[in-house]
Length: 128
Length: 324
Ligand SMILES: [Zn+2]
Ligand SMILES: [Zn+2]
Image (tube, rainbow over all chains, first blue to last red; front, side, top):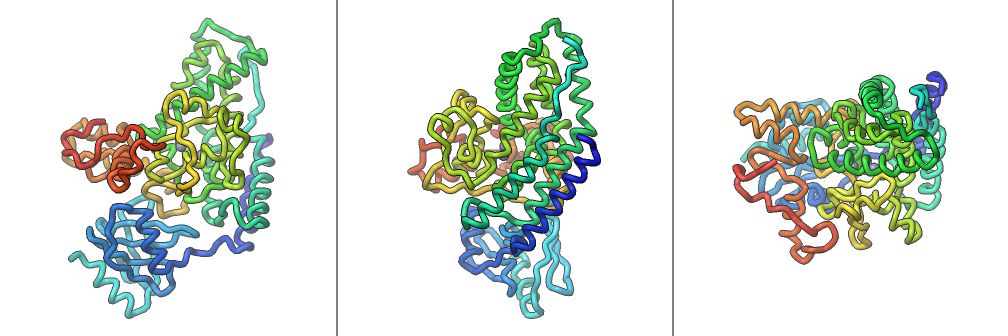
């Protein structure tokens, strides 16, 4: 196949499919409830005992306290990803908190929090 | 046989068909309201990975090709190009695929390339195209050496490999439940391959087949899809990014970070590079066998059921005892 034809097909195909998915509402982020957050955490870490769940007000992230320490659950598109808060840094961000994992496959999460939430989350994330 | 023999690059010619099939699957799901899930960024990432795979083949394919042509010059055997030879080549190359794929899940160096095919939490036709960019660096082309030394022309071997990949496209769907019994018995199907994409403890490390599921049955790695256990797609530790560069290289970066940690013995460094995924020198991570053992500890009633036949030892054992 001539390279130009292949490039046109590939670029046109990807752009067309992306547009179709986006316009049909497939770009929505997962919204968590406390129950969903627990269920999702257990899916990622079946050995963990969950102590409590703190949801961000937009429902796209949850701070989980477990018997082995705190963890972050967040929406990645329609699904969720979870990491224990062990090897991480955080920075204040105008929209909330920016959390950095030293993990090339999950580098950074922006958790949207209001002022009150931000103070509470900072406190919860401190190691005991 | 002449060295100028050429076969069409079937994967490139299949691109229009891939696009049409994705649109058809999406329409089916949208109309029926079942049979799978699509997500914009996930699908776009998968498609970009597919495009990058073709590009990496164009850029790096010469490495494997030069190796194959070197073998072809060495071998005195030439089986010719009859239809039966092509058919035999296809079957034997599928056996080759089974073992490369099995190594891809059991040796971290090869997993670093293959992991991205499993890095989506979705399972639809775009997932089929989420293919590696780094296959050349696994050196798994050596597994094809016997085929070429036996007298199958390199172009024919690559043609069969391309057909194999195209076959595997259509099985990446939840829109098809089960195929007829005889077909499920012999061929790789959506049902068998869904299981392969599962992160459930039961479904780890099974159904490596490309086209013929018989290899898994022969080598003891077959696990049928269970009605009462839906497949949870993705990785044991799912990645938190849609960035294609991160998807392509995250496990390579993780390997190099682990191998270069200060204070490890040579044996431990080798374990991080060539041991099974989940190997750790201090027992801080779990291999698939240890994940299965932990799951059995929570659910002892599952012992001996599909996927829990021969559990490895639990991970509670001392670190010194860990072997590669
Ligand atoms: Zn695989
Ligand atoms: Zn697959």
